[in-house]
Amino acid sequence: MTPLELREKGYHILVSYLGQVDAIHFLQQMGWGHGDYTQERGEILASVTRE
Image 1 (spheres, rainbow, N blue to C red):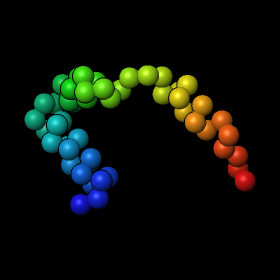
Image 2 (tube, rainbow, N blue to C red):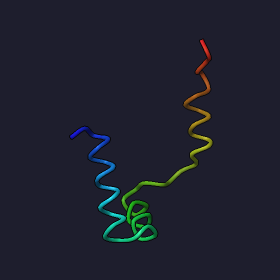
Image 3 (tube, helix red, strand yellow):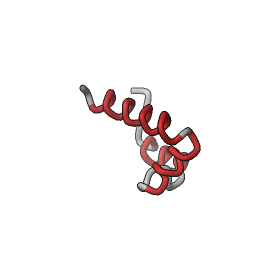
Image 4 (cartoon, rainbow, N blue to C red):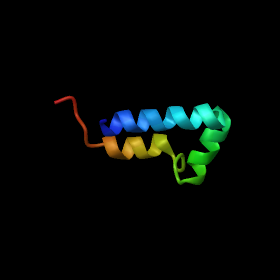
C-alpha cells in the first residue's frame, strides 16, 4: 500500500466511525488543520515560475 493509499484508507475509516464533523475535530486535535493555507501556499509558490 502506498502512503497515499494508506492516508485515504485512514481518512475513510475515521469518517466511517466518527462521522465527518468528529473526524475533522479529531484531525484538528492531532495538529492538522492549523495555520493559514492561503498565506503558506503563497510563500511556498512565490518562487515558482511557468518555466
